[in-house]
Length: 447
Image (cartoon, rainbow, N blue to C red; front, side, top):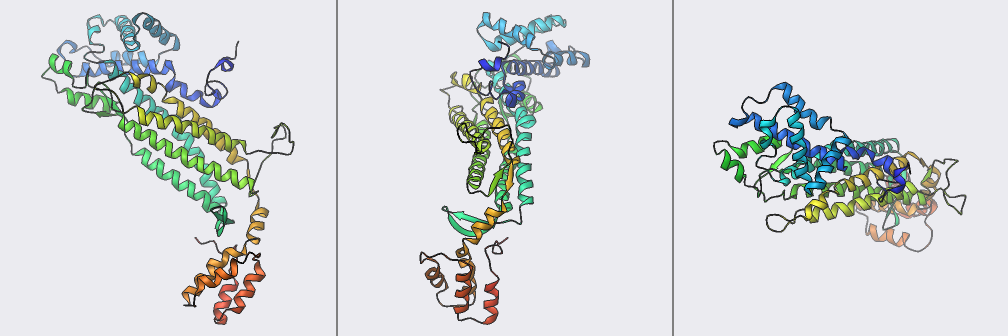
C-alpha cells in the first residue's frame, strides 16, 4: 500500500502525520541514530583538542569538517546500516560505534579507532543525545508553533478589548468584563510560562560507567576531566549534571515536562471557555460550505477544533506527567526502564502540535456575536448592584450591601427600570443619584 499513514499504529504517525512530520528530524529512529553519531563525533573532536598524547596533531580544520559531515549529512540509508549492525550486536549504541569505525577508516583514521567512545558508557551518549534532541525540537519547532497561537490570542485580546461582556462566576451572572480582557488573561498566563520555560537548562549526563569518570582519570590523570566534561556538554548547549550515577537523574528534564504540561493545561482552559462561549452564542463560527457538522443534523456547526485541541492537550499532559514522575526514578546506579520510556519524549510534543493546529484553526473561525453579548447584559441589570452598593458604601449609607441584597434576591426579574426606580428611592443627594443613574452593565467593566 502506497499510503503508509493508513498502516500507522498511532494517529500521530497516521491520521495527523501532516501536523507532526516536522518532528521526525528530532524523534524518529533515524533522528536518534543521527544525534548519537553527532555526540560520538563531537566527543572525538573534543578529545583531539584535549592534551591526549595519542591524538596530538591528528585534527585539522579540513578533517574536522569531514568528521562533522558524518552526522550532518547522514542519510536514512546510512542510518539503516547502523540498524543492520545492531541486529548483530543487539546493542544500539555499540552499533553506532562500529559504524563510525568504518567511516573513520574511510578518512584514514585507523590509528584512532580505539578513541571512538573512549571511556564512555552508552548513557553518556543517550543522556546527551536525548536532551539535545528535545532542546532543538522545542526551540526550532514546538515553541514557534506555540507562539503563533499566542500571537492570535494577543491579537484577539486587542481587537475585542472594548467589547463589554457579562461575566460568569460559578456559572452565574457576575460583574461585567470585556471580551478582550478575558483573552488577555490567557495571553499573560502563557507569556509567564514561556518566560519561565526560557530560563530552564537542558541537563546531560557525561561521566563514564557510573558517573565518576573512572576510566578517564585512570588513563590520563593529568587531564582535568571534570572541566573537560563540563566544557564539552556546554559546547552542545546543554548543562552537565554532576555527580550522577550511570544515568542522568532527569530532575531538570522533569521540570521542562512540568512546564510544558502547565502550558497545555492553560490552553485546555482556553478551549473549554471558548467552547462554552460558542454554546452561549457569544461566538459564531465561519462556515465552510463543503464541511459537515453532524452526520444527522444538517444545521450544526460543532466546535470540533477546540474539542480536538483539548483532547490532544490532554493526551500530551498524561504522557508528560508519566515522564516527569517515572524518569527521575532508577534502581541503584541504573536500571533500564528509562531507556524505552525516553524514546517516547517526542510523543507529547506531537500531540501538542496537533492541538496547536486545531486551536489555530478554531480561533481563526471565531466571529464575535455582539447581539448575544448585548442580549445577556440587557437581561442582567442585577449585576450593577455591586456598583450601586459600592457608591453607597463610599457615602457611608447605612447597610448598603443588605439594601441591594433585598432588592436583587426577590426572585423577580431585575431590569433597567427596577434599578432606576430603586435609585430614586435612596436617601442621597441628587448629585449621587446622577452618578448612579449612568451606571449600566455596559459601562461597569473596570479596567
